[in-house]
Length: 100
Image (cartoon, rainbow, N blue to C red; front, side, top):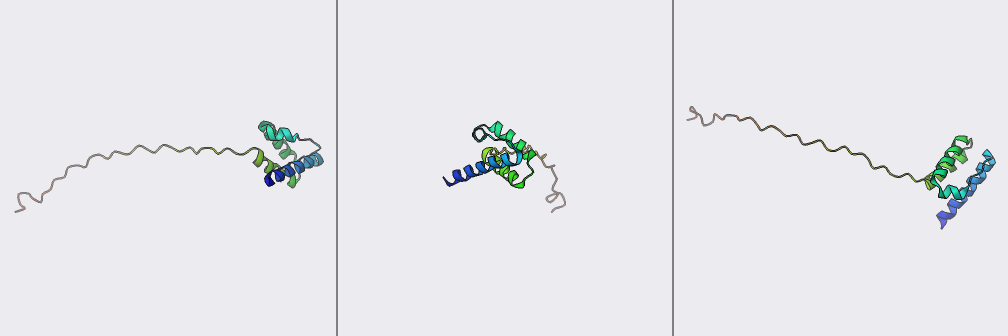
């Protein structure tokens, strides 16, 4: 419940800050339900904002409303095992003609 109240306060402050600094309106219902609208509107406000506090609000709302989906890392397949050629036959002269 505490988290919901904090987010509601943030969104209310965001709407008022946008109205005050940019003289634009934000549809909060649509912002929370329509991801494409949220992405577009937050990007527009981010570009137009000159206030640091407003930019921080945009970043916080973007993190909450548009969570980043983790991208699976691309793992290169392991190289095929190298086949070593059979060792060359070496001759052992330990038991040769002169070993006696």
